[in-house]
Length: 134
Image (cartoon, rainbow, N blue to C red):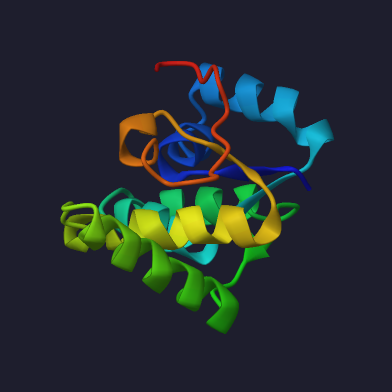
């Protein structure tokens, strides 16, 4: 596994948008995973849709590893919050993004996201360069 898929990219796959399905199919051989945070964010959106969307969401997860938040990731996210505060930034609105970033950092993964502006200031975080719809 080398790539961590963020919510904005994963939702296109769950919603079976052609660009999202083909993009993840292209990345799959590299090794992809999502975080428990991405699961939470996407499932929250799925709950707003028709009931069959929950089954589609779960079927998309069948072969996709989900990385749980553990104490190492929690501490890394807390350190990122602290560093951002020291840099004069307000990390509160980005708490979930910081957990995703910490997950990528702890596991040595490249984050695949269209919301690169949310992550560019995270030291050492590798971001995937070209995501459809960016």
